[in-house]
Length: 85
Image 1 (spheres, rainbow, N blue to C red):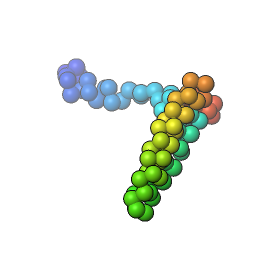
Image 2 (image 1 turned 90 degrees about the vertical axis):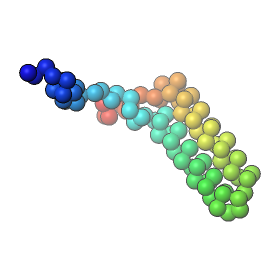
Image 3 (image 1 turned 90 degrees about the horizontal axis):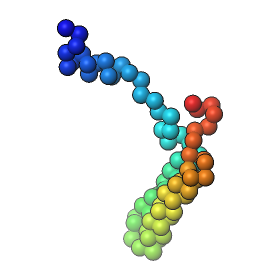
């Protein structure tokens, strides 16, 4: 009776899922930092006015942050540091 649907679900939960590239890389950290700064500046721009010029500049910086993360990943910085594996 150990082969029921409920028991199969428990067996799958017990299996360890590998998280090799779970965002802990220089490319991911750089992208997140740039986008976080952009969103913060955009939020400040909306509170102080709204200042639409500063808001759209922050949108552009957020897009550049995402692109920077992808470029860094393609250049080989998308793998975790040796101590994190």
